[in-house]
Length: 92
Image (cartoon, rainbow, N blue to C red):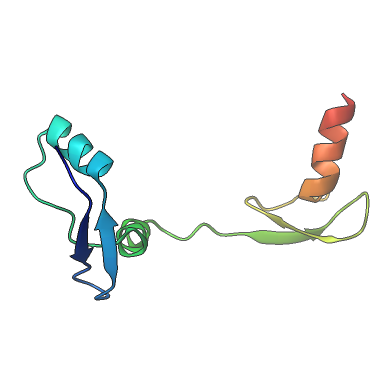
């Protein structure tokens, strides 16, 4: 029924495969056009419109390593790196 097709990305010019499974999915959804961009270019295009999330750094209260945080830390509560936080969560 469907066979894999090799297409060329219109952004980067790389070849990519439009698989039989993807073609079937497109047909089920009623999509008329084949994809024009490879996965990397599609992902880059999607992420370009998203604002960059601000990150903050702090020192882990447990091990002393630098921790990157999606929030601004306050001095009244301890901050943990992801490894220490996961280990503490397992203990509970």
